[in-house]
Length: 316
Image (cartoon, rainbow, N blue to C red; front, side, top):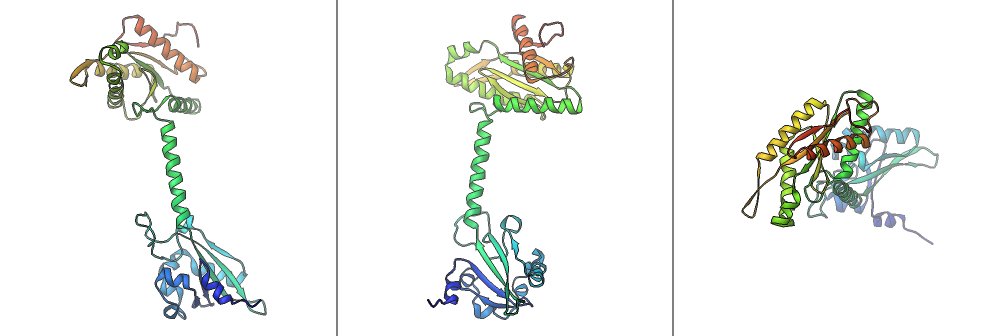
């Protein structure tokens, strides 16, 4: 079988350029003509560094010299360099990239005596794969965000809260310093639903989430704990400061009218607060249990108040 290797190279869906020891172009295939808009007639005999000066910044000359001297292969990866040659990206109506994304391989070409006399540079268009990978990463990030976000309020959900609390407990055990946890419950929330409907109740919870974000400090975390309950993690905060912060939050909510279809709805909340103070080995269950017991006392004592966990109570 007689094969025309020149025809094969010209038909490849790859860029092929062959360079001599002075990095002058001795071959420039049809793929490169199409994508660079430079004909072989214009580039053969010219230095590829002169044609594409930014190759000097990518270490192209050094990599080529190692191929000539050592007879090994060298590579330019898209993830590190984006592209080898600045070929215009014309196949996409919208893209974040100006140039075709590429992987490139520098291969030694030997003469009959085994000496490397030329370097063959093969260039692969990886733009499709790069855009697809970025789309998958974006979707993955969106799904991860959704899995950690409460669909109604947009606040972190219970799963996100637990992850954050575990991290805060680990930080506390490594570095010391207190932190506090508060559980907040809307008083008589069933009456809101019964009087104005569940759409109103959902609206109120959403607006309450916004109000909590505005009232808390930027480094505090508030999450929807479940139903009409919210949980707040107060980093680097002892119980006294935690009580002051949550009392400010409680007062703000009491003084904030929530509107729905022309109706003004007044809310109050009961809050239970605890901290790592007095806990030799804080755990997620212990912190939440203590805050929940303090919340129960706030409700028993008349609601619309903040209650601190008492060390005299039984339990962890």
